[in-house]
Length: 252
Image (tube, rainbow, N blue to C red; front, side, top):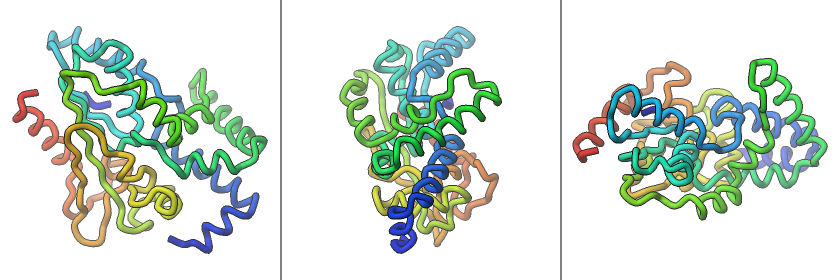
C-alpha cells in the first residue's frame, strides 16, 4: 500500500520583505510536497479497509512518503488499524518535524502569516478542497508539534516499523523550490533532502540512508519521481520494488 549562503540567510532574517518571501516559499513547498491538510488518519484508515475488503487479505504493508508516514502512524495507533497492518515503511517522513518551520512561524508577524494563509486557502477552495487549513498543516509539522504527537502515537506492538531517507549534497541538486529551501533547512536542521532533515526521518527498528553516488543527491521529490529525472545510481522504480521484495523476504 502506497500512501549555505549565510549572507542570503541574514538578509532573509532581517528584512520583512524577505520574511514574506520566505513564508510564501514555505507555503509552496508544503502545499506541493506535504499536502495542505493537518496530519490525520482518515485517508490511510479508509484505504486499509478498502484493500482488506477488495482482496480478502488479513494485513497490509504500508510504504508511505513524507507526511503520509505521519498519517499512517496515526491510523495504526489511534484508529485501530494495528491488527490489519504488518509493516510501515516511511520514506523521507518528518517524524520529528522541521525546526526551521517553527522558527519562521514564531518570527513572522501574525498578520503576514494569516494573509499568505488566506491566499493559499482561497486558491485551494477554487481547486475543490472544501476545508483547507494552511497554518494548521504547517504548524503540525513543526518540531514541537511532532514531539507532542509522537508522545501520544507510540509504535503498535506487532507492527514492523522502518524508515528510509535520502539527502542532497548541494542546493542545486533539488529542483525548484527545494533548491531554495535546502540551505535554509541545512542551517537549522542539518543534512536534508531539500525539505526534511535526515535526523527527523529516523524511525523504527531499521533505518536506511540512501547514499547518492557521485556528486548528485536524491531530493524529497526524487524519491517519488516528481521530476521524471534519471539520477545516476538511483532507479526510483527499482527502489520501491526492492522495498517490497525485502518485506517479502522478512515474511511480511
